[in-house]
Amino acid sequence: MDQTEWERRIADIRSGGDDLDRALEASMALKGLTDRSRIPELEHLIQDDDFFMREAAASPLINLKGLGALPLLLQALERGTQPGHDHDGLALEITELIESHKTEAVPLLLAMLRDPKGQTRSHAAWLLGFISDVVSPEVLTDVLKDLNPNVRSSAVGSLSSFKDHPGVLEAMLPLLDDGEEQVRVDAASALGYFGDRRAIPALRDALSDPSERVRRFAESSLGLLGDRRES
Image (cartoon, rainbow, N blue to C red; front, side, top):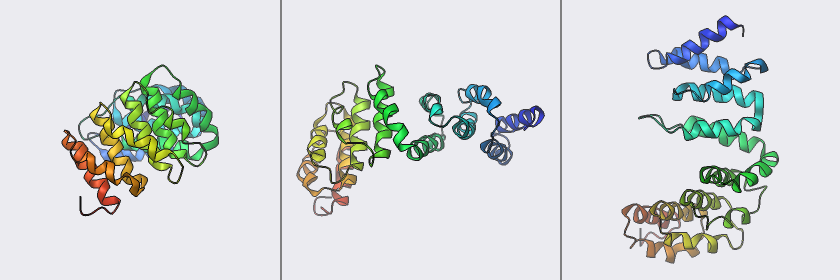
């Protein structure tokens, strides 16, 4: 891709609000980019104010840098959302990157779990759930008491991927009584996907939670566990 085409493609992506088809075509053209000289430009674009530009830069940056792109990808994810744009595409790019480099991702994510920044630890706890076949659940149960509620939420959610591991259910259940509503919501949801019917009594108790959201997710999980009488 020469400079003229590059500039045209970038301009087309920026036109996404006016011509979505043209922007999508330009994004696909960038996706197969193999020119490593474009890495600095892609690293700049993934920090762009335009959510569509950030997502368009993700795939080529992953193609060229692999796991080395993860810090910038997560920073882009942290930029938040705009009305109608939930960054699901970017989140999917990140999880697919981790799933395709499971073994190599383990030390990186474990190091992130020790980071002083709570958001970084939360990202690590979230992503560890996608490589549950190559890590021990203890790496997540150990952070269920993290002072940052986002980390606790991510950890309990990811633990739902560690089915049939002894001690995981017992580690998850106390999060139904967490002081933060969102943590209780995520715990109630995760217990349904975890699939262990021993969680039913605790989920029934959660139907009396002061939070309507917690009650709703507890009810949904009871249904997943086959406790139709209560749900």
